[in-house]
Image: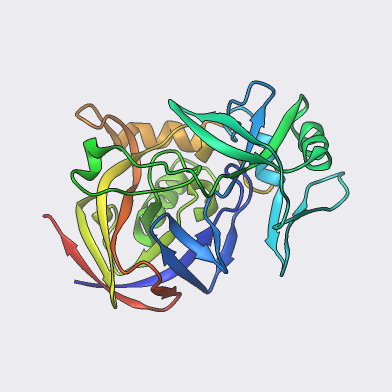
Length: 280
């Protein structure tokens, strides 16, 4: 079946605001723009443990932009911060869930800036290009799927119709609609029925092939308002009433995780027609 890419999103810093794109390059580790990858940077606490909107909803208000030579950051009440792409720091060990990952520090100014945003000592680090982190073979099988600081996989795909169905349910319950930013997808598709991406096997765009490997279990992050950083349980609670599953993987599902099977280096564009293979 055919579908259309309607949104592409890159998240330079895990947990911070993403960038809506009209075009991206598909790398083995996910989407890239001019060599800058998805979840290339990470905010960690004083012990090197990763921080996200789960613990620090204020990260939702950290705006990210890519310039010719730097990562440009803004946040309410903060001076603009420029983090040069050429920054060189120490290689340290950080943790994302159960993974210990090599990362490069980004300087005392960036650390102080994020410490103020977070409200306790924090550091900004960048994925060490000499390090390789692979998605679990439990889900990828024989395929090796490298990725950076994302939770577990290089890509997240969601269909527009799934969000439309959620918003219809919110409206019936007397709640305001939400937008796709709460779910932090990389690729959004039109042309699917609601939750039909659950059955996605392959997405093909020209020479590129993506393989869906696992439904995406959601945490509390969809409860964070991406504009204000305010937290409410409305969205997670509603999703739990009809999107929970008890089998493996278990959890409340919304969207599907994918890996790159072929075509690294291929461009993806908003408006591209893609071919989908479903397992119905």
